Image 1 (cartoon, rainbow, N blue to C red):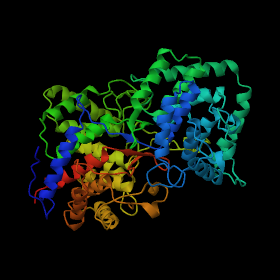
Image 2 (cartoon, one colour; image 1 turned 90 degrees about the horizontal axis):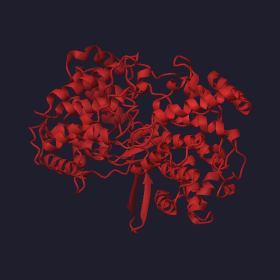
Image 3 (tube, rainbow, N blue to C red; image 1 turned 60 degrees about the vertical axis):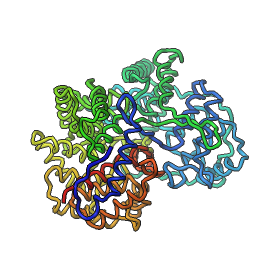
Image 4 (tube, helix red, strand yellow; image 1 turned 180 degrees about the vertical axis):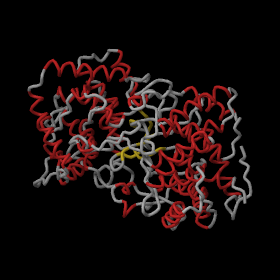
Length: 637
């Protein structure tokens, strides 16, 4: 189809933009599933593949065919120095390299082989197994490669803590609580399967200094508490311990989803299956069988350049998110609201509305459900970010059942507004999930374990509510105030779920303008100045994921990518910027479009846990450029 562009300012609406949009829209349409949804691969690092093999080894269900195919993928991602990273082009990561090494050894790779020897040398030089993160050492403990005595204790009695008590399970983010509850069973039972081999070659060759323990008072308190729990574990009050484990078991079972998983993500899924197996569930029990079978739906199988089968595991899947973003992109590109493919996608999204009460109701017990989750099946954990995007997408569509659509939108708007935290911002899954205590636990050395309000999520919700009229004006005002208060000193905004300051700024500026903030406002001018200063010489924008740990060096800096260039352009467009800076960004997108109509982007620009776990959304490199090009092309002079 041809996208109709209106006269623009400067040369941003020239034939190249229209041609690029036509190609990109056609490519998007080709990717739609017959059911109406879009879904790109959600690519992470090879720990997912390594842990999948270790999980199957633990349950005794690993096959040689699976192992060989997964090992090919793991080897394909090893770098020239023998290591693996958490993201494309990132620094070597010790924990990822250890898990990959163990998985390849499980696949039969010779420790003396060049690629294995290089990895082992890096591990030894990095301090060996002792310097890996807690989650890696849990996997090692399953096979006796690490002592359970050297791991933090997670007592199942935590499930008895009332919802108002510090460190109850609802003080943790949904992804953390779903992982912690099964791990309380695992930590209590401390299973050890016979190790298929030793790991003596990974012992450090020089003395290890060790990690410096946090010195703040709460961290010291929890280290002392952990020492006490180690003693209690040896002599627990057996009736209470057994009852707590049964309560944890039932907590897990109640949250199994229709696809057999837990939370739509890998960690709680595999740990829940391990915990239930330890509680005596046979592999053919419906809960176990459904859970194991469901993992196949998260497995991607393809062939390498030699025709050999490769197998990789997705940590999560994003059909609802991808479909919402795609519809917004099609709207921006000028695709008619009544296009049959748009209408089909709208129908699928309405069918995916969640009407069940989930964990979010612990903090908002009187709120009527009405929202969407990220995945095909995750009814216990809808999220505000997805819901905001879906609402904006559905508003654009011309679905024939207008009454139903209006009811769905009304519920979603009310639910999202009701999930506002007390400070005026929004977190992704829970309201007021802001306790600092979970961050101080010895267990919490990997990833975010709470879900406080973030700039990107708050911005998407402010934009959605403001675009809907005056009904939620007080919520919009509070959200705008929150965003103004959380602008960085340099003019950018932090991106919790995307990389990073470019993502945050690309979300906030359009939201502020939609909410009625004058583009000449000082906050927006500072953001524009920051984006202009961060534009690369080639005209694009990029930001390396190291900006989460080293903001001064990497904030808004990195090799240009299609998704990050688009985010910058979305902010500039909202701010009324149509001059040379914007033109160079648009030129970068049109010049880098590939023959299919998309853009090549090996970089990871999505974020799971800042500083620890990153995501490459394969749809980002397509939908966001369409949004940016479409908005510029349709802007009148």
